[in-house]
Image (tube, rainbow, N blue to C red; front, side, top):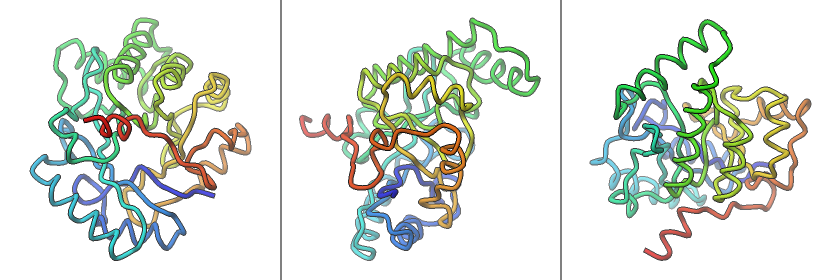
Length: 256
């Protein structure tokens, strides 16, 4: 039922396969296409390099020629501060074809406050299993919503994974701005109760593997196990069956 996997990593960040490897795996899985979405430029350990974008785009076209499926060049951009700044800039727009973004820990933070709250406080809260403070939830929620409002983000990746925020507010912001809320099949990022609250906002979804190896491209195992409890509305998953998402970034580029 999955037709397109929009979130896959390659050796250009910390995946184990090449762009062609992922495309071949997608074809074998019966997909119509994939996006290559390696980590954005501010990741301290696994960042993609701007100098490689042209080469990656060429490899995407070659993978399309060999496999006969669509291979989009994207980036999983890092959201890097309270104002919702992303490390994909307008100067990069002519190179990439889809814009994913998420919050990660091991990135370069613009302010001391972002470092202390996004990195330190989230980690401490996660590791100790203490109740997150109201201030931390509000801060992280503001970061997510500012990023969605201020950038043409097509897909918000693994929302709230390792980050304490209000899932309803984040999902509603996605719905208001036309950003798809990812159901990530690599890691559990919401509880069943939180998923139900997100579904109630009427936000639209995509299901992505977040594959870091070619053998996981198109993998739905975690989604299927969650679906037994959550019952995701199929008509709002826009990379299932014959549905395709209307991407904010694509619409923006039409007018550039």
